[in-house]
Length: 169
Image 1 (cartoon, rainbow, N blue to C red):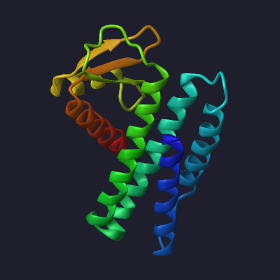
Image 2: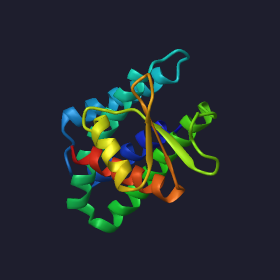
Image 3: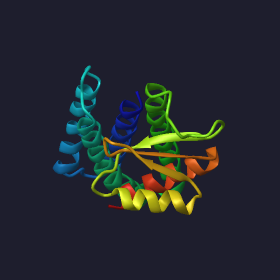
Image 4: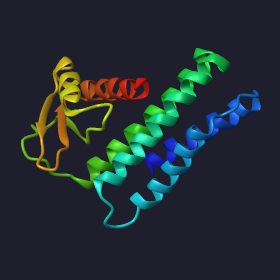
């Protein structure tokens, strides 16, 4: 649901930009269509983490372009509203992943955790550095993903910073 919500928010931004006469480049539209296709594939039973990674890459590409254009067209107040909605959708993705994997060894009781899959623009080293800056603990897993855990405020800030960096690149 979180990826679908993110996709819909990005679609809404495109609609608003088009109403203002902004032309959306074909590569951005292709990435948005590819993201939708990969979201549908990821919902099929037996899909791999690679599919999820591709969804995140496509959505990050589209989001990066649209937020930049929206800032030029609408100003920061409207863009901040969209960013809040996007952040809520990303948190929804993390909650879904958290529900899928209820039991993680080594996470102290009372602490929040997320499982992060590194992408090209956010390699494991950078994710570990971000987590350390926020006093979070990182445990690498056999499948290449990272479990990041700590205080709830730290996890929220980690998600914000991770999203901001993915958008920049």
